[in-house]
Amino acid sequence: MNRLLMSMLVLVVVAFGAMPAKAVTITYSTSGSNGPVFLTPTSTGDITYPPNSTLNLTEKLTLGNTIGGTYGETFTYIPFTVSVPAFLSATVSDLNLSNPSATPLEWLSLSLYKYTGSGDSILDCSSGSILCSLEQYDADPPVASIYSALVAGTQYLLQVGFGFCGCSGQFGGIQLTVATTPIPTAMLLFASALLGMGGVAMRRRRTADAVA
Image (tube, rainbow, N blue to C red; front, top):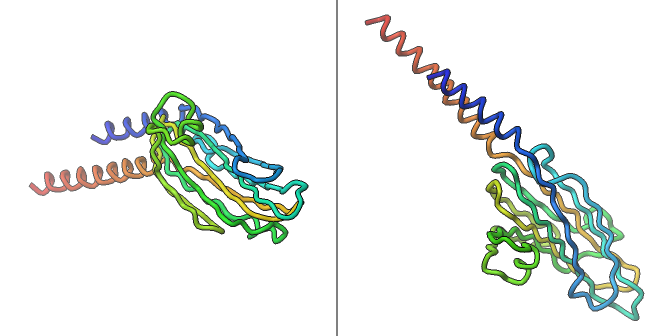
């Protein structure tokens, strides 16, 4: 019994460790703005697991040269597919919280979609395709967060949006952190617990046989 459980545990570790990670693709859109805007995004890391599990994205939207005030907004689409079952946590915050020079946002949203089609998940989800299902949504500035379990091989789309009003030269933005934790880690702990329980049961059985 112990040998069988140990063999299964080793196979699980080898199988999940050998799966390659798939990089994310980030697409931007400034549709909805009523004046010229300039987007300055920076991103580091990856959403997938393994080997990397954390993505940090900073976006700064600057209003262009306009007469009087204007409105600017941007949507960020991050399609990705995890290579192993994982738990996702994503938090987006108003850049004004860390940079007082940034204009406070008027609205902020964070959404996670699951796409079951074979086309362009960005275009299909943004157009309301029935192949897209909304998994999680939060729109509470200045900080929005979502948490969800992810299925390996499923196409996901993380959508981040924000908007603000201001004058020429003013800017606003967001800081997004996305982290994934592999669900197999919990499974391995469970398997270890089973091994321990199996050892205890076998020891009790031997003791009972000795007494008999």
